[in-house]
Image (tube, rainbow, N blue to C red; front, side, top):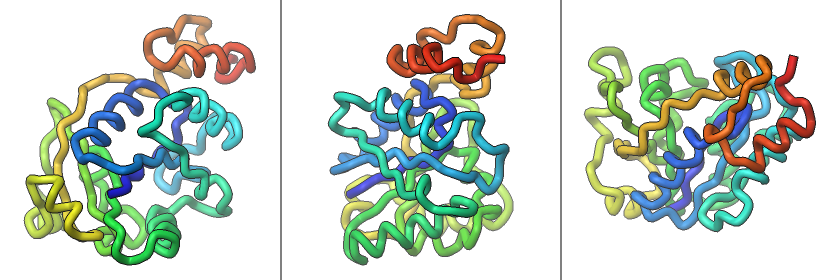
Length: 210
């Protein structure tokens, strides 16, 4: 099974990387692709350029065999809709490969605001990272999706190419990219929040500084 984890990664930090590794190991993924978004449809545009964010991802994952980078959204114009990305992946992988989209609980709560969101589960499995303090949606259309599609075991995901939803506990790291950018802008240290190689790149290039 191949997993994909999208985000702006502005910058990539341990709050992305540790949960990604947690899910890679829990699901027994053959490959986990970090998918940097070029133009997020539902949030402010990234502060760093696509090229800068890609460089930081490359530095963060260097030497980590279980994580790789998928650049397809960086090379596609217009808003980076996940449904388009999944259709592109399906065209490459075929209809029988098991594919899992890894998302956070906050994304699950807002899933019905995603472009053509009902098609997502026909193209992949949804694996939702769970942390203390977050709860499963109790109302709205996403509730039906959870009730109808939820499974408890990663083996059940591997048996099918798409169509299921699973919750996966991950290490709780309360790290936000916005906090890192604010520290850098204020001339304070962001050490221990992100890989040293990424921090050195930020310092060397003056990225996020006022």
